[in-house]
Length: 424
Image 1 (cartoon, rainbow, N blue to C red):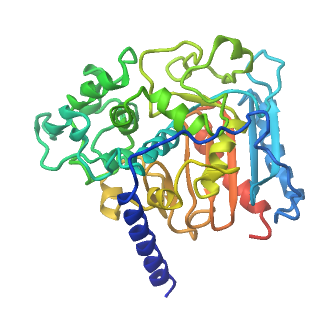
Image 2: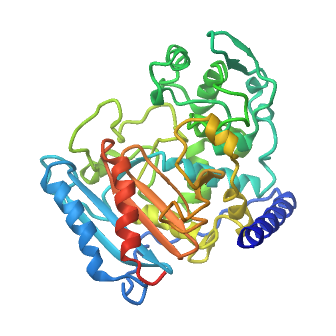
């Protein structure tokens, strides 16, 4: 019976969202900007928020222990409910050999946590009628009209399905990330074809990607991929401005996220977080701009800044009186775009009981996942993570620079936080 009720509710949300988005007007005016000097971190009473403070000893011991063991230089964790923070603490220092402590103002490479920000930027264009989720990508990027699909024998055949804009946002486009399976023939073909170049602007990079073979027909399998990088080019065309300008005008600027950017000024270098174990292939210098504004992984931010974005999502698209998304627009983003067949056919899917919407992973079954059903979230390859759990009105932001421990911290954070939540 519960499943039937949820199904009816989901159908109602989908209908309301489609009607609202279809009627959206083409005009846009910049929302007012929040004061960045007024912190997003509003402390609340942990007990009143439903937590047992005694159980906060577990994350404190775990993260402090990892610092002491030299596994990480430092980290920052915060979580809370009802818009207030129950736990916030920095651990260790900003990098090896440094003395500056980790704080809510330390700047981290958030890598793939760029994807939700760019996806939200895209949805502001959708709700104005400037971008159509169900339109072929070729409407905005003509070269995507003639895509080809990789075959087992190394040949390619013409794609029989069009790649749609929503396929880019849900990683069902057929594109790939070569680093996930770097030794496979298709990944090698992508490397030779220039996948790892960063000397091209978003529009030119999208042209390069269009010439590479798809892993599968669009809309048939979930593969984590360069999709959001291509989406960045779509956003530029639909929005008529460079990606960084559109992101700033429509999301980070209005929310007062002054420390969130594709590249940071040299004057902020003293606030940069660095990994305990350097990996030059991953940890780029985020004060040294390249031509490519990577919509899939190019931004850096702070815990305090990113919390503004998270609280906007937790607020149904609005934060402190500044509305970025309509409630029905955010509801559309939280609809699962995958099927069991698509998840099985793909690679690197978030896990059991999960789905994937337009820019976020989704908890579909909280009997196999700790966060409540309906939770939407994403993470970055260096271990940064956020989630919004509407069922429990809970949010979290975690910042670290450790590729090696990224998956480990995902499991630990879920245990630490939900073990401490004694009044769901």
